Amino acid sequence: MNEKQFNDLMLQIITNVIEEKHEKHFVYNRIFKKLMMSDKTNKLKLAKYLLGRLLRESYRIFFNAQINATQNCPHQKKFSEPGKIVYH
Image 1: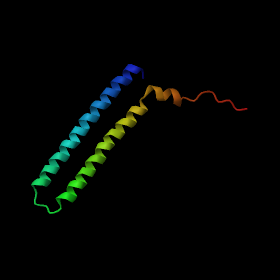
Image 2 (image 1 turned 90 degrees about the vertical axis):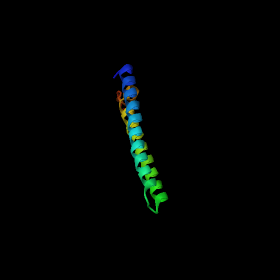
Image 3 (image 1 turned 90 degrees about the horizontal axis):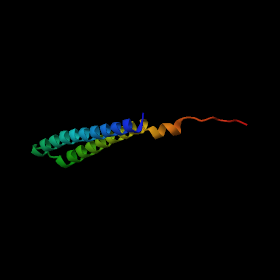
Image 4 (image 1 turned 30 degrees about the horizontal axis):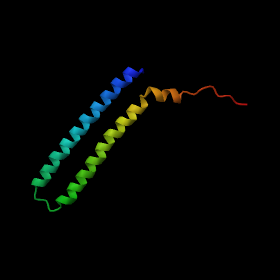
């Protein structure tokens, strides 16, 4: 993979991360609004739980994209190729 292909891949990864995070936030925002309109007595506890889930899922999206970018990085492949090993 050359530098241009990697840059195109990075732009695609960034676009996907932004879109996926936006979708997750939209879903959780809708759930949160339903919670606020409900007559539940433990709204604070449920809201904290929803926020924690959103943060974990949002981080997972970013983390998976980071792994994908690292695996496709052309510079990483230069260092991972084993050179000649001389045993004396």
